[in-house]
Image 1 (cartoon, rainbow, N blue to C red):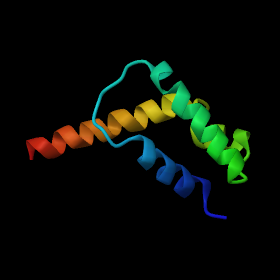
Image 2 (spheres, one colour):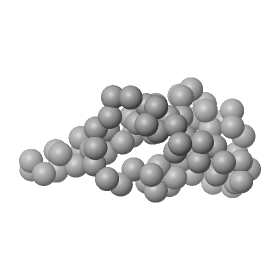
Image 3 (spheres, helix red, strand yellow):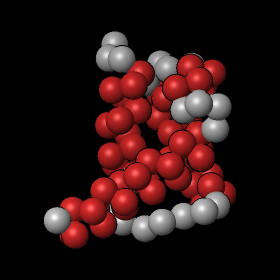
Image 4 (cartoon, rainbow, N blue to C red):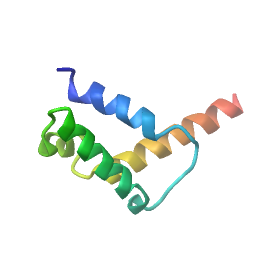
Length: 78
């Protein structure tokens, strides 16, 4: 089985693909539930997923979204 970090990167790339900044992680609760279901389907324990996300899946997705957006903005400035 692939490394959970690699798995998570692939799944996040499917979620985060449109620039946009967010301050509230609740917007990503639905995506977090989808990640939990995908992890379960792929044999990844929910506890391992939560650990890989630093304890909060929705906040992790939001932070990745915001990092993606900032990189997109920076690339537009270059």
